[in-house]
Length: 408
Image (cartoon, rainbow, N blue to C red):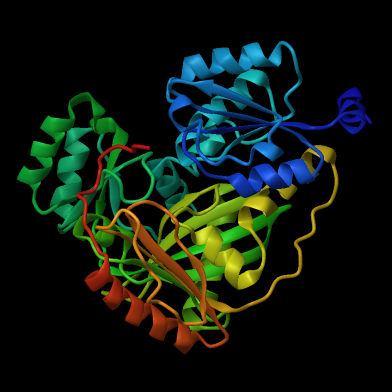
């Protein structure tokens, strides 16, 4: 065994978690339970959030984590006085900085090129397409002749997507070429950070996976009620429900998800991947994937229905890898579950009139309302989602136009 391995075995592993948003509490707690020294680097504006301080050895604050060179200087300075074994990005917007830090400090984990396949929508589409995986017809927007050729061969509408934003943020639906050129004028030098893709109407699904040694040990296959882009741009209630494991859609999605993860080369960790079943041809298309825990409280739905927390399992996987130890997935259950979330016009919505025993979780966030329901029968979950979505629209629902950039 090499000196580095002995060194790790003789002292606690130090994990630095970087997050520009308040999330990942279960990761932090699990890392501490695993005996690690846990450091958190976050932004000053969210320092007072309810971070699990009992599980964090030191907290470091910066005014802006988006400034890559400042982050490199700060973490390199921190490294002078202590050895950091593992750097984890808890939020999507820190993934690229953490990849750069790993390269700079020569630490284990995905570097910049590999990270692109799980962060850059253009890179992941190009790689998936090379491997024969169906994706909506797309083009980069580097060269105008290529863009013109694309528009002449692919029927609109199209969607102009930021390559590195999360969710539906910054996506524009384009109906004709004139509209696209107007957007290019507005974007100016930023336009190369976008891709143009055919708009494919269909049912949108997501698969959230836990991976170890190139094997998918756990996958939760879920279907959105309305596509997230529709909710983000038109308002309404966001819903997601777990599909029966042996249903035709779930079986097909698990096979496609395995193909995508293999093509993009993720050996271990967690993923959140999205797919669409096109109304026109009934085929499944790959939309995007991230090497992180799914947002919008999807991890809470998995925990409530399966009894395992993706954040905690991600921590166990990363720490087992550093220690050179095996990872074993805990036993889990297979119950049906559903999630509803909506903006609320009330600052603190009163949900006391929602009393069904299947409610296992209620959202606690200003100007938001949300529930998780769990049942033994899929039909009961679907019934509650339909009822609650309608009631929430009348009781609480508010709408805010989608942002082009993230805010805290």
